[in-house]
Length: 240
Image (cartoon, rainbow, N blue to C red):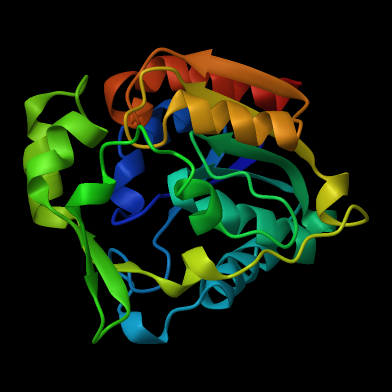
Protein backbone atom coordinates (compact mmCIF):
# COMPACT_ATOMS: atom_id res chain seq x y z
CA UNK A 1 0.00 0.00 0.00
CA UNK A 2 1.14 3.55 -0.66
CA UNK A 3 0.84 7.11 0.59
CA UNK A 4 -1.14 9.45 -1.64
CA UNK A 5 -0.89 13.23 -1.29
CA UNK A 6 -3.84 14.92 -2.98
CA UNK A 7 -3.48 18.50 -4.24
CA UNK A 8 -6.58 20.52 -5.10
CA UNK A 9 -7.02 22.95 -8.00
CA UNK A 10 -7.81 26.66 -8.29
CA UNK A 11 -10.18 28.27 -5.78
CA UNK A 12 -10.68 24.95 -4.00
CA UNK A 13 -9.05 23.25 -1.01
CA UNK A 14 -8.71 19.85 0.66
CA UNK A 15 -12.50 19.41 0.85
CA UNK A 16 -12.35 18.44 -2.86
CA UNK A 17 -11.28 14.98 -1.81
CA UNK A 18 -13.87 14.20 0.88
CA UNK A 19 -15.31 11.31 -1.16
CA UNK A 20 -11.96 9.97 -2.36
CA UNK A 21 -10.05 9.85 0.93
CA UNK A 22 -12.23 7.23 2.68
CA UNK A 23 -12.35 4.99 -0.39
CA UNK A 24 -8.58 4.92 -0.72
CA UNK A 25 -8.16 4.43 3.03
CA UNK A 26 -10.60 1.50 2.99
CA UNK A 27 -8.35 -0.06 0.36
CA UNK A 28 -5.39 0.17 2.72
CA UNK A 29 -3.65 3.30 1.47
CA UNK A 30 -2.51 6.29 3.50
CA UNK A 31 -4.02 9.51 2.17
CA UNK A 32 -3.36 13.18 2.90
CA UNK A 33 -5.42 15.96 1.30
CA UNK A 34 -3.46 19.20 1.58
CA UNK A 35 -4.69 22.79 1.83
CA UNK A 36 -2.24 24.87 -0.18
CA UNK A 37 -1.14 28.24 1.28
CA UNK A 38 -4.04 30.72 1.69
CA UNK A 39 -6.55 28.02 0.73
CA UNK A 40 -9.03 26.22 2.95
CA UNK A 41 -7.82 26.13 6.54
CA UNK A 42 -4.41 27.62 5.68
CA UNK A 43 -4.42 31.27 6.71
CA UNK A 44 -1.31 32.49 4.88
CA UNK A 45 -2.12 35.98 3.50
CA UNK A 46 -2.95 35.44 -0.14
CA UNK A 47 -0.84 38.36 -1.34
CA UNK A 48 2.23 36.58 0.08
CA UNK A 49 1.69 33.34 -1.83
CA UNK A 50 3.97 32.40 -4.72
CA UNK A 51 4.54 29.13 -6.54
CA UNK A 52 7.51 28.53 -4.26
CA UNK A 53 5.34 29.07 -1.16
CA UNK A 54 3.05 26.25 -2.25
CA UNK A 55 5.86 23.97 -3.36
CA UNK A 56 7.74 24.40 -0.08
CA UNK A 57 4.64 23.52 1.96
CA UNK A 58 4.24 20.35 -0.08
CA UNK A 59 7.94 19.50 0.22
CA UNK A 60 7.79 19.91 4.01
CA UNK A 61 4.92 17.43 4.11
CA UNK A 62 6.81 14.99 1.87
CA UNK A 63 9.86 15.26 4.16
CA UNK A 64 7.73 14.31 7.17
CA UNK A 65 6.62 11.01 5.62
CA UNK A 66 8.64 7.83 5.76
CA UNK A 67 9.13 6.28 2.36
CA UNK A 68 8.03 7.47 -1.05
CA UNK A 69 4.72 9.11 -1.95
CA UNK A 70 2.42 9.42 -4.95
CA UNK A 71 1.40 12.99 -5.72
CA UNK A 72 -1.99 13.65 -7.34
CA UNK A 73 -2.46 17.17 -8.69
CA UNK A 74 -5.72 18.56 -10.01
CA UNK A 75 -6.18 21.34 -12.55
CA UNK A 76 -3.88 24.37 -12.19
CA UNK A 77 -1.88 22.79 -9.41
CA UNK A 78 -0.33 20.20 -11.61
CA UNK A 79 2.37 22.87 -11.63
CA UNK A 80 2.87 22.40 -7.88
CA UNK A 81 3.47 18.66 -8.10
CA UNK A 82 5.82 19.15 -11.05
CA UNK A 83 7.97 21.68 -9.26
CA UNK A 84 7.95 19.60 -6.07
CA UNK A 85 9.21 16.63 -8.09
CA UNK A 86 12.19 18.68 -9.22
CA UNK A 87 13.09 19.27 -5.56
CA UNK A 88 12.16 15.85 -4.10
CA UNK A 89 12.54 13.39 -6.95
CA UNK A 90 14.10 10.85 -4.57
CA UNK A 91 10.96 10.89 -2.37
CA UNK A 92 8.27 10.78 -5.05
CA UNK A 93 7.32 7.47 -6.61
CA UNK A 94 4.79 8.73 -9.15
CA UNK A 95 3.10 11.91 -10.35
CA UNK A 96 -0.58 11.80 -11.31
CA UNK A 97 -2.08 14.69 -13.29
CA UNK A 98 -5.88 14.78 -12.96
CA UNK A 99 -7.18 17.08 -15.71
CA UNK A 100 -4.13 19.03 -14.64
CA UNK A 101 -1.63 21.43 -16.14
CA UNK A 102 1.36 19.39 -17.26
CA UNK A 103 3.76 22.16 -18.21
CA UNK A 104 7.30 21.80 -19.60
CA UNK A 105 10.42 23.48 -18.31
CA UNK A 106 10.51 27.25 -18.74
CA UNK A 107 6.79 27.58 -19.49
CA UNK A 108 3.90 28.85 -17.34
CA UNK A 109 0.44 27.53 -16.58
CA UNK A 110 -1.08 30.71 -17.99
CA UNK A 111 0.59 30.18 -21.37
CA UNK A 112 -1.29 26.91 -21.74
CA UNK A 113 -4.52 28.19 -20.24
CA UNK A 114 -4.65 30.93 -22.88
CA UNK A 115 -4.49 28.27 -25.61
CA UNK A 116 -7.61 26.58 -24.21
CA UNK A 117 -10.07 28.81 -26.07
CA UNK A 118 -13.06 26.47 -25.66
CA UNK A 119 -12.99 26.49 -21.85
CA UNK A 120 -16.01 28.20 -20.30
CA UNK A 121 -14.44 29.66 -17.15
CA UNK A 122 -12.38 32.61 -18.39
CA UNK A 123 -15.23 35.16 -18.78
CA UNK A 124 -16.19 34.47 -15.17
CA UNK A 125 -12.75 34.96 -13.60
CA UNK A 126 -12.26 38.22 -11.71
CA UNK A 127 -8.81 39.66 -10.92
CA UNK A 128 -8.33 41.44 -7.58
CA UNK A 129 -5.26 43.63 -7.93
CA UNK A 130 -5.05 44.59 -4.25
CA UNK A 131 -4.35 40.97 -3.28
CA UNK A 132 -3.01 39.74 -6.65
CA UNK A 133 -5.65 37.03 -6.65
CA UNK A 134 -8.64 35.83 -8.63
CA UNK A 135 -12.12 34.58 -7.87
CA UNK A 136 -14.59 32.63 -9.98
CA UNK A 137 -18.15 33.91 -10.31
CA UNK A 138 -20.68 31.42 -8.90
CA UNK A 139 -22.85 31.66 -12.02
CA UNK A 140 -20.45 29.30 -13.82
CA UNK A 141 -19.87 26.78 -11.03
CA UNK A 142 -22.42 24.20 -12.16
CA UNK A 143 -21.81 24.38 -15.91
CA UNK A 144 -18.08 24.84 -15.73
CA UNK A 145 -17.02 22.58 -12.88
CA UNK A 146 -19.81 20.29 -11.67
CA UNK A 147 -22.29 19.61 -14.48
CA UNK A 148 -22.39 15.87 -13.65
CA UNK A 149 -22.26 16.28 -9.86
CA UNK A 150 -24.99 16.25 -7.25
CA UNK A 151 -26.55 19.64 -6.61
CA UNK A 152 -25.22 19.87 -3.07
CA UNK A 153 -21.67 20.10 -4.46
CA UNK A 154 -22.51 23.40 -6.15
CA UNK A 155 -24.12 24.58 -2.91
CA UNK A 156 -20.97 23.67 -0.98
CA UNK A 157 -18.81 25.44 -3.54
CA UNK A 158 -20.77 28.65 -3.05
CA UNK A 159 -19.74 28.52 0.60
CA UNK A 160 -16.19 27.19 0.27
CA UNK A 161 -14.56 28.44 -2.92
CA UNK A 162 -12.13 31.28 -2.22
CA UNK A 163 -9.56 33.57 -3.79
CA UNK A 164 -6.79 31.96 -5.82
CA UNK A 165 -3.20 33.29 -5.84
CA UNK A 166 -2.44 34.70 -9.29
CA UNK A 167 1.34 34.85 -9.40
CA UNK A 168 1.92 31.07 -9.41
CA UNK A 169 0.23 30.80 -12.79
CA UNK A 170 2.66 33.24 -14.42
CA UNK A 171 5.81 31.73 -12.87
CA UNK A 172 7.91 29.64 -15.27
CA UNK A 173 8.58 26.10 -14.09
CA UNK A 174 12.19 25.12 -13.49
CA UNK A 175 12.42 21.43 -14.36
CA UNK A 176 15.28 19.14 -15.34
CA UNK A 177 15.32 15.73 -16.97
CA UNK A 178 17.71 14.53 -14.28
CA UNK A 179 15.30 15.19 -11.41
CA UNK A 180 11.75 15.89 -12.55
CA UNK A 181 12.20 13.70 -15.59
CA UNK A 182 13.18 10.72 -13.44
CA UNK A 183 9.74 10.51 -11.79
CA UNK A 184 7.12 8.41 -13.58
CA UNK A 185 4.15 10.45 -14.82
CA UNK A 186 0.52 9.43 -15.36
CA UNK A 187 -2.36 11.46 -16.78
CA UNK A 188 -6.07 11.10 -16.04
CA UNK A 189 -8.03 12.83 -18.77
CA UNK A 190 -11.56 14.04 -18.05
CA UNK A 191 -13.29 13.69 -21.42
CA UNK A 192 -16.29 15.92 -20.64
CA UNK A 193 -14.27 18.67 -18.99
CA UNK A 194 -15.44 22.22 -19.70
CA UNK A 195 -12.84 23.96 -17.53
CA UNK A 196 -9.59 22.36 -18.73
CA UNK A 197 -10.88 20.97 -22.00
CA UNK A 198 -9.85 17.67 -23.59
CA UNK A 199 -8.07 19.67 -26.32
CA UNK A 200 -5.56 21.21 -23.93
CA UNK A 201 -5.26 18.06 -21.82
CA UNK A 202 -4.26 16.06 -24.89
CA UNK A 203 -1.88 18.77 -26.07
CA UNK A 204 -0.09 18.70 -22.73
CA UNK A 205 0.27 14.95 -22.33
CA UNK A 206 1.35 14.68 -25.97
CA UNK A 207 4.07 17.30 -25.54
CA UNK A 208 5.14 15.88 -22.17
CA UNK A 209 4.54 12.14 -22.49
CA UNK A 210 3.35 10.04 -19.57
CA UNK A 211 3.78 6.33 -18.94
CA UNK A 212 0.02 5.83 -19.20
CA UNK A 213 -3.01 7.98 -19.94
CA UNK A 214 -6.37 7.06 -18.44
CA UNK A 215 -9.67 8.57 -19.55
CA UNK A 216 -12.69 9.05 -17.33
CA UNK A 217 -15.99 10.36 -18.84
CA UNK A 218 -16.61 13.19 -16.39
CA UNK A 219 -16.61 16.92 -15.82
CA UNK A 220 -13.62 18.66 -14.25
CA UNK A 221 -14.57 17.11 -10.90
CA UNK A 222 -14.52 13.28 -10.99
CA UNK A 223 -13.67 13.23 -7.27
CA UNK A 224 -17.29 14.34 -6.78
CA UNK A 225 -19.14 12.68 -9.67
CA UNK A 226 -17.31 9.33 -10.00
CA UNK A 227 -15.13 8.85 -6.90
CA UNK A 228 -15.16 5.04 -7.06
CA UNK A 229 -14.03 5.02 -10.68
CA UNK A 230 -11.35 7.60 -9.94
CA UNK A 231 -10.08 5.53 -7.03
CA UNK A 232 -10.00 2.45 -9.25
CA UNK A 233 -7.63 4.32 -11.57
CA UNK A 234 -5.50 5.60 -8.68
CA UNK A 235 -5.29 2.07 -7.31
CA UNK A 236 -4.19 0.75 -10.70
CA UNK A 237 -1.51 3.44 -10.89
CA UNK A 238 -0.28 2.55 -7.41
CA UNK A 239 0.27 -1.06 -8.53
CA UNK A 240 1.76 -0.23 -11.94
